[in-house]
Figure 1 (cartoon, rainbow, N blue to C red):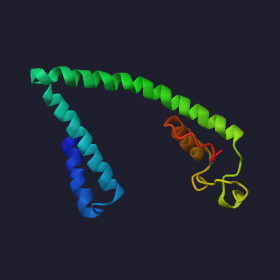
Figure 2: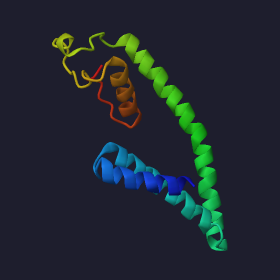
Figure 3: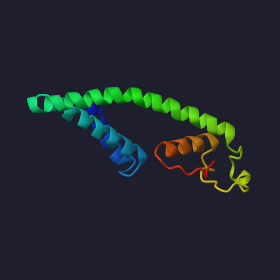
Figure 4: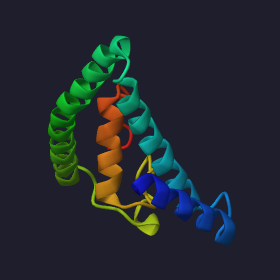
Amino acid sequence: MTHIGLGYANIYCQYSVGTWALSSKIVLLAIICIGLLKTFFFMRIVKKFSYIVTMINRVFVDLLVFLLFFVIQVTMFAQLFNVISPPAVHAEDTEGLQNNEYRHIGMWMGNLLTVLRLSLGDFSFDVL
């Protein structure tokens, strides 16, 4: 039912707001994800695919626990960087800073993105 409802929402978004609007893209992404889930569901019928589909489902379930832990850790370190980083968050306050890469999104979101970059292996501490 969700797939059918999103199909009609896609038709409405494509007609009323246009193909390249954000709402149209979000609806299309949801349709693609639901289509993938339906494909996995029907692949379980074939015995050779049943094992791999079951394994992929278990990996996603186990991965959710890790992602929750990861989000908690990233949020905690972003809060820690809020304490030790310079308090200037506005464009007029950042003239003295060497790197004002995240000046338009605020200090907390900038520190969150910095922690995500650090977790991905970008060990540039210029932002701090």
